[in-house]
Image 1 (tube, rainbow, N blue to C red):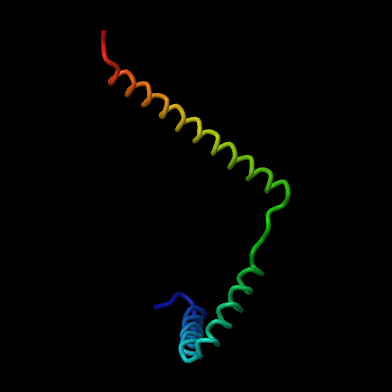
Image 2 (cartoon, rainbow, N blue to C red):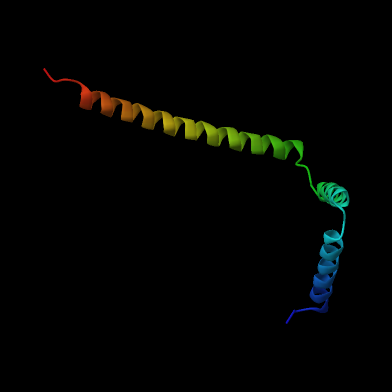
Length: 89
């Protein structure tokens, strides 16, 4: 059973919307899709310049650390393979 009467009415609304959408023509469904996309994009919040710079710095820092780890692993494996396949004198 639902916790509030609003959940039941929301379920009915969603069911009605899906029933109406299934009866639409293909072009009507495309138009509905783009209307829903625009409605969702209106809900998007953009970061401030300070947040954007902070996020950019975090991403660049993380990428730098991953590059360093991969470089060190590559160098280590290269030395290991070179050592193991070098003929001894």
